[in-house]
Image (cartoon, rainbow, N blue to C red; front, side, top):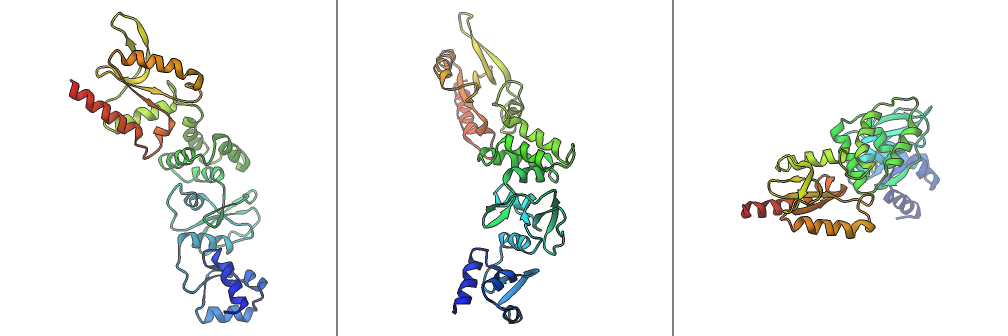
Length: 306
């Protein structure tokens, strides 16, 4: 292997096995050499002036990068493709890329979107793409509420983004009020603005989860009264007939300075025969099982004692 081949291989190894004609020329390869490699099958053209070296397996990340390299200058993976690169959703069958306004939207292998200005890229899995905040803004325009909520929840739970950053991306990308999907996006962000609290969207989602898990519809703001008639407090939600309650935790409502009083209150309530489970927003994450497992165990104990 000569120095030129070695340099080509090294560059392609950082690009999912791809090389562009411009990159090859900068490394010292002549047009005739590029043409010869394509004609003999050593390189395969996968997008305009973008080639995959022989023996390199195809992947969806490779196709996404080829779409970026073969589109207008500054093209980045976007929409569901960027979501997949951030592991927020499965990759689409056809990659999506975004280019700046005035750039060509032609591509034989991708769906091309134009933006007011090309988004500043981040690199995920070796592919330039929109950041998570902009990705959620874009996906809000093409996804229904359920799929969008899953993406938002996953991004928030993994702390990939904040509500403020998503709203900033929304403002920066909108051309006029009422961007497509804006209402859906703001609705999916709502549970993440505050902690789980009485009457909040997060509380509503928790109640829905409890029913989906097979538990009865919980009561809200459940009063706990001692044998002597003293009101010990109200549990955020629960089931009074089996004396099982759920208390919401958060830095805002249950910070370190409140732990001592919370613990004393919980012990007083438990002394009256109640079983208490604590919940926070992590328990709303898709696939999170801690709260469900605790409730299964406590409900089983309550049934045995009945």
